[in-house]
Amino acid sequence: MEQSEQHTLNVENCKRITATGIQTVDSFSASQLVLSYAGGKINVTGSEMKITSFSKSNGQFSASGNITGVKYSAKSTGLKQKLFR
Image (cartoon, rainbow, N blue to C red):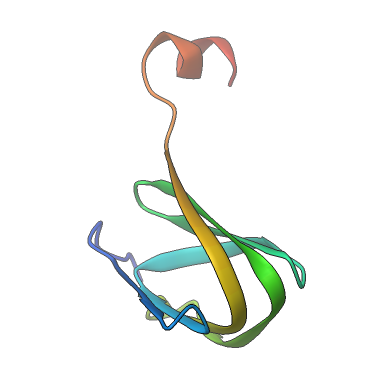
């Protein structure tokens, strides 16, 4: 099932994060989560983080813990992408 390029991301009281449109969980630990979506990656930092649910079939994701930061990074495009395949 191909997921659309749209996604949502909600952080509730710096304690819970929910997202849609997530394709994969690239890495996770108690202090960092790296998620992939159609536009690139989402890096979530914090402490005591736990994944509470993830459905690859519909892209639903949720985690809890002490969330201190969320950073987006876009997919590589152009010359950089062609050079480093």
